[in-house]
Structure formats: C-alpha cells, structure tokens
Image (tube, rainbow, N blue to C red; front, side):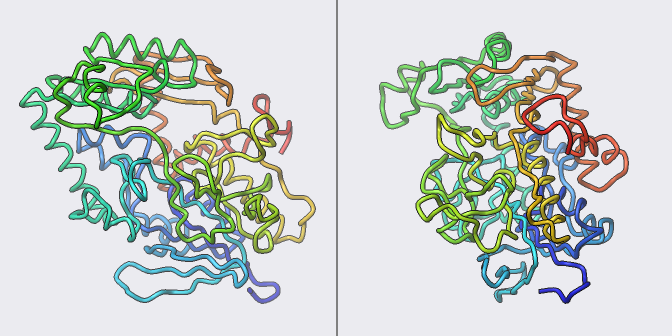
Length: 447
C-alpha cells in the first residue's frame, strides 16, 4: 500500500482503447502503470482494410511506449500478466525479453484486457486480433510469426495479402462464415480489392447483420448481391458434411475459408472464482457489478472480489448483469464505445474510493452509444446504425453510401489521434464520454 498522503497506484491491464482512456483519465491523480502483451496499439475496427491494402496498417498502429511514457507520463510495461492476486493486490507479470516474473503492486486495478475472436480455436484466434498470449502460440495457425512485435503484425498482414493475391490470380472460391458486420466487411473488402475471387457468405440467422434493423440488412444484402457475392442464410456451418457444400452451391468445397463469428474470453490470469461458467465462446468472462467492480461468480455468492478495488471494463467482462427476463443490465456489445464508457465509470469510482467516498460510487448503465454500428462495404460505401439495443431489429439506419464511408474514416482517424494523445483527437472525443447531461440512453440525466 502507498504511504498516507502519497499518490495511490493504479494498474491497468491492457493498453488498447479502454486502457488508453483510463491512463489519460487517471494520470494526474495517480501513479499509473499500463501493462500490455504487445508493443503497439492497433485500431481493431479498421484492421480488415489493412489485409487487403497493407499500407493502411501504418495509419492504424503506433508504438505504445513513447505515447504512454513520453507524452502521457505514465509507466508502460511490455509484458503479459500471468496472475492477479486480489488479496495481496499484486500482479505477476512476465516482461518481454525475460523468463523471470515481476511482481507489480497496486492500490487499484482496472482490467482492460479485451477478448479474442474465433470460437473454434482453443484460445481463440483470428485475423482481426493478433495472437499475443504465450500459451496460445502452441495452438496458432501462424506460430512462425510473433505478433507481439509491430513488425510481426506487419509480416502477418503482408502474408495474408499475398495469399489473397494468389487466390485472385487463380479466380479461387472463398467462403466467409458469418454475416455479422465483421463478415460483411471482410467479404466486401475482398471483393473490392480482389474482384476475381468468387465469394460466398453464409450465416445461421435468416439474414445478414443479425439483430440490427431490417433497413441496414437490406442495404448490405443489396450491395453484396450487386457485387456478385453469393449469400446463404438459415445455414449451419458444417464443413465435414457434403450436403452442406451442395446447399451453398460449392460441391467441391472452397479454396479458402474465413470464420468471422464469435468471441472468446482471454482472462487466463484471473482466478476461476471470478469467471463465468457460461457465455459466448464457452464462458470465462469476468463477473462484475454495476460499479464495474469484479465479483465472484453467482454460484459462490456473487459478492465483491478482493476488497472492491479491482474493476473489469469492456470486452473482458461478462457484458451483462442479471438473468434473461430479469436484467439489471442487458448484454452490452463487445465494441469499443461501451468499453470506454465503462472505463469512465470505473475511473470515477477509483477516484471516489481514493477520496474515501465508498458509499457514493457511480452505477454503470447500458450506454446509448453501444447501439451504434458502422459497417464498411468496401472503401466507398457503408451504412451507419444508431439507437440499437438488446432487442432484435432495433435501431435505425441513419447514414449510408459515401457519407457513411466518410463518417467511418473520420471516426477512425480522429480516434487514433486521441489514442496517440494528440490535441485534435482529444478535442473531438473528450465530451463523447464526459457528457455532463444525457438526453439519450439509460443513464442518469446528470453525471
């Protein structure tokens, strides 16, 4: 523990969207340490473009250490958290370039570690998120590349680009499994940059874009149809069944398959008593309460874990509180906006705990911005949905075509600028989460 009167110590596990937000929010009042398993920030919502246009990766990434230590003035450790001890308030960290474990003490901790994608892999693996956990390397399809390094990530992007180039040369067939916004974006990116590839997209649901409004689904489906992308819905992915391939008009199979469904928890450092037994990808998500504090699983009473000084925000947590039909907070999409909103609430509560206001903690809510989805359809088209919630087909398509594509470019450019701690991005995004008055959503009128 820090001595009386001294600044308290905050440990942030993860240095991407939510960790970056927390570091900027807390740096003036606390000694902040950020731990991340990779050396760089990557703007995940835009990374699909990099695989079809590798030069785009440079605009999506930056090295973390100079931004955190030289600009923000917080400590950055490039390493992987292997264990978190809530009683001792320590984290066991394996730094890069060392086989020894470091023990990092803290007064407060915010877990911002995100999640993986790809439910068919033991630890989750996909193109859209680099493989950075040491234990996952043995199961990796690209174990020859170390994506903890920015150069390793760049090599992977180039390798996939050249694979697509060869598929395009031989007019190959490609199957995209999953027609959510990731699958739709990936299929349309390939179609635009590699027009000779013969694309098919499938989904278990009756149409693309899952629970989003019909207008957006119809817009994207019309675009894919006009581009020659074959669509098959109400279709279960069953690659070992010949009848499946006949159903989607690929009797000889596909030359390449991209699975764009599902998320996978990556909370390997957390004790089992805090992790869910069920949920997307087989469970393993961190339980939390409305103050964003980590809790024990319901079967163990659901009480606050440790002493309430450890928080879990964004994609790493269970995403909902309560049970279907009796939600305290319905499932929140695993996207960056609600993660940052939760990070803001956790930061407010860390400040309140540090000032002795334990009985005045902020309660989180289902943020209105969690219902915003921008889906690219190649570089010159897109659709933007706002106002969606946990109910099927909710929300409205409020922007589309070139204006929506430009909107997504502006969001991407300005958000990366903010994460690099540059003043233009900070000015654009500051009041998105620091809104003093809420006219929309389920939060209080005033914060």
